Image (cartoon, rainbow, N blue to C red; front, side):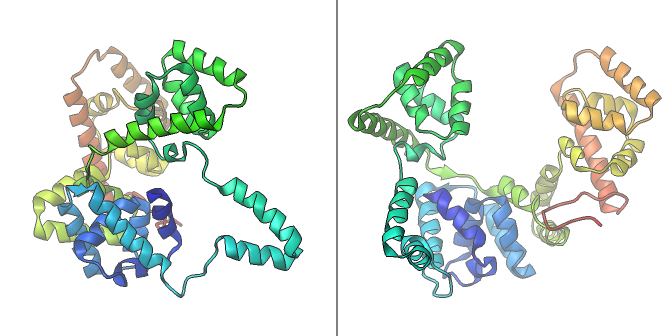
Length: 350
């Protein structure tokens, strides 16, 4: 339900969410954290510079928020959203009116009945937003037949993730039972659903906090345009230099070099010492390695690959330090305008 509400704000005029809702700064900050970085970035793009600065400072202070407070604020926004007279209204009644106008009342009634059947909430609907790891934790000790029953009510993508996360021997047993499963009585399905929901609720009730703070801000800033980012970071530097440094350190990571175009990568590589680069690439993804090799001369790429092959084991801290060095140089080139790190969906290069 909360996820449905969060998505519902995607299409609402975003500049109305913060300005017209009767809420305080903390509520607005919690709302931004709750809807996720992309929607939050879209909202910020519609606000004034002063409003953005104030909200981001508030987000930084929201390190601990109770689940109850989060749900209450989301509910408040959602009710405000639904109560707006200016919003178009859909729903079953609207669908019925459209169908009646198109096909007449008798046919519309039949079609709406089928529609109701397809959109009704089915068993285990509460699991659709449950993380795979958490779901596996809850069901892995259940009988294979019970697990099979649960998986048949999940969508294919979620069910496959859960199945892949089980132990091999359990995977086989569950898969067999799914393959031969026929009709199961509604009473059995309901009983299993109730037990599982109670188990999940008991554990979920212990987790009362969501985290805002620096990670939340970084997630938002990675999705805003460059102008908004600079406004916020400049504000942070004036108010709290330590906070600004912490945010900046997380804004661009080593793997994000994949987002640079080839010219930018070539420019960065000119500034990096060969020994630093070979160490930084120790635990880089294959995709990133290929991109870096592709933007070097054949001779330079061969030497780098040879250096990496004979390097031997390295401390993780040393590898991370080398990666930070590469990232720092990349940011310096971006700040000087020599390369461009594209940020946010709205920042397109031409």
